[in-house]
Length: 279
Ligand SMILES: NC(=O)c1ccc[n+]([C@@H]2O[C@H](COP(=O)([O-])OP(=O)(O)OC[C@H]3O[C@@H](n4cnc5c(N)ncnc54)[C@H](OP(=O)(O)O)[C@@H]3O)[C@@H](O)[C@H]2O)c1
Image (cartoon, rainbow, N blue to C red; front, side, top):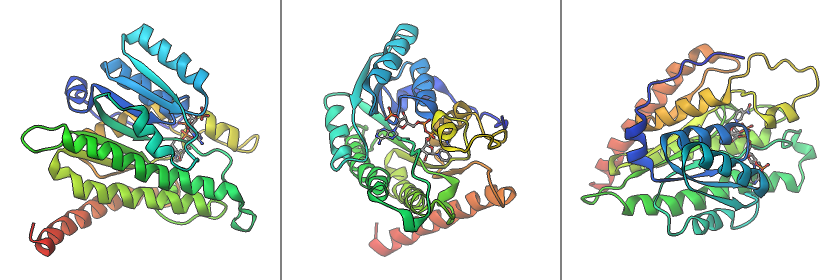
């Protein structure tokens, strides 16, 4: 397992800012489960979303017994039309301060000429569902701050595959590029209004989804622990970062500089936009 130094995180302050409820899309195992556990440990209540309701109920009940949180388990296939709107509706009446777009996509690798309806399901999950959920929860976050300011956060689990193209992953890579640009754009629109948004260019992580996908004997010794990645995403959100690139893959030694350059460019566009709109 590859080590990742954990960033500092003020957990009571995190709960105050992004609690009392968080919604995790893709929560039943792996990285999603790691988010659920760390948030529950902080005392944040959870809306757990995925296709396997029994797994969500088992996780929610275990976290409730261990940490005394409340939970709501929502069975939803995120590749369906209208899934994002249904997640927002499923959380109606709860004071939600955090949305995490996490769902994994085992089985979507393959050469483009072989792409099927599965490609469109991937687009619906990583783009359409994300747009509707971010829009719905974002409006809620804008409304719940004090003195005209918003309060809340959005974490978008993208991938290093979204920083550039990759063979055998054209559609995955394309949708992850959307997620990165979308996260940065929302950061630029929201961060001065009390809402934090971060895109995670996630690295290879040893999750059940990954282990089901790779061929037998494939070396995953360089994979990160998903709990470390989830922890640093929460810390990066609170630190106000727009994009976290976890070193991984070819050219990884340059990735901290890429992260800094992209942030500087984004800040430049925020100022440009103020001049442009007179805002
Ligand atoms: N693992 C890696 O190496 C890696 C690398 C780079 C980026 N990422 C990104 O990191 C995120 C987490 O990936 P992961 O591999 O670690 O997965 P994960 O968090 O271990 O598990 C995937 C979760 O997504 C849910 N899910 C999958 N398809 C779904 C669907 N159609 N509708 C609703 N829920 C669905 C699964 O639950 P159900 O089966 O119950 O539906 C499960 O809870 C993803 O966005 C992935 O693209 C992962």
